[in-house]
Length: 175
Image (tube, rainbow, N blue to C red):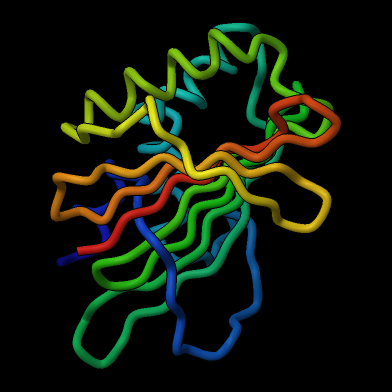
């Protein structure tokens, strides 16, 4: 699967075998074209980003890396930062990737954010089991993990809480 076809999913799990590359600004002259294209697609297709922008958030920075393997498949990492504090990171490799939305102070309206997440999963044709989360921890954070049990996508949505506030959403999937 070509990465440019995977971008709209924004739901995958990343595994990188390539060495770390120097990060560059999305609009730098020497930046891989994937960075600018991915940034544009994310702001157009990612409902969680669109929700932040509808509340007045603006894109403050865009950076990342991209590398093309010998087989022509792309791997990359895209980082977007918004004026309201939202940080977005998308990492992808052939057939896999992960999207992380972080709001360090907590998302302003958890219920509305979760509704946007559910609409986004539905838009991506993922039948997530929103009724039966797995509850765990990552460090000091509580993690509620939801899965798409009847899907070939291995889709997972993890909601991370700190001090009772929703501070991050991680979406992942793999072919």
